[in-house]
Length: 80
Image 1 (cartoon, helix red, strand yellow):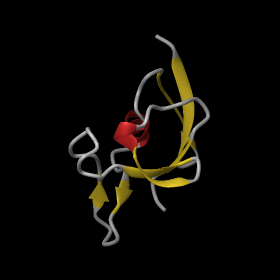
Image 2 (image 1 turned 180 degrees about the vertical axis):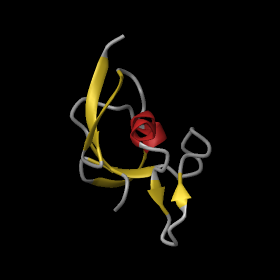
Image 3 (image 1 turned 90 degrees about the vertical axis):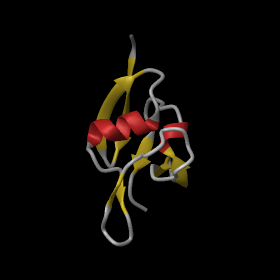
Image 4 (image 1 turned 135 degrees about the vertical axis):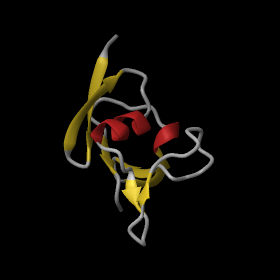
């Protein structure tokens, strides 16, 4: 299977071609982002309903990582 490399919070992450951005963020670390109160957040549903996996992708904020396929060269930021 082919793999691709993208950036998550400035760190290069390799995932299989066809993986979601959520998979790439999970490879980077266990916490997707932190709530305004500092609580760790991660995907709960994996199907775009809970909105806990929101990230910025290539400068576009509030995208659900579980609903976007990873592409080579993407820049993903887990905090605003």
